[in-house]
Amino acid sequence: RGDIVAAAAFNDVTAEVRVDLLDGTTGALRARADLPAVGLSALSMSADGQRVVVSAGMNLFVLDPTGRTVHAQPLSLATQAVGVSMDGGTVAYGDFASVRLLTEFPGFGYVSTGTVAGGATELPTRLDLSRDGTLAAIGWWDYTSGRSARLEIFDLLFQFPMASHDLP
Image 1: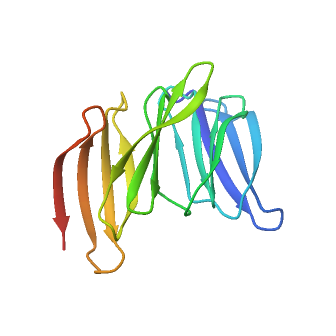
Image 2: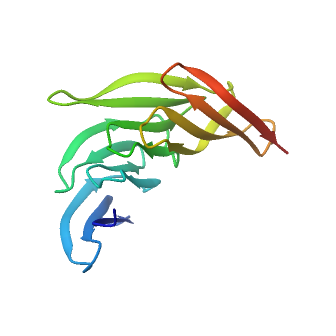
């Protein structure tokens, strides 16, 4: 909607990621969060501006529009593959040979609700979710064969790959 703009920067001196939520029209600061981190890998915001997802080194954070952390969890690797549905109800992030899914249950927070398996030697490098969070577009990279990429469209609701294409 353009009502909120999210910007993030890593400060290696303080070992923090600063996330600023700005008014999309005036640029005025609406909220700020300083998150403990060893790096900044990805930043994604739901289309309605209600959730901001930050892959900060070895941690994943989900923030609300006030900058409050509504979910935090450790990651097994620093990932650039992060996606969020339009309403922020579904969050996806990359892991070794998989994409992990989180679903928000009002009053209970985010809960792990599934996994999309990749090849044993693949890492998800890019990730996007459909507006309703039922489809994932995943860019996989095989870190042992040198194959540059495999693109996959995956149905998260019925748990099956809809399309896959290997790129040289």
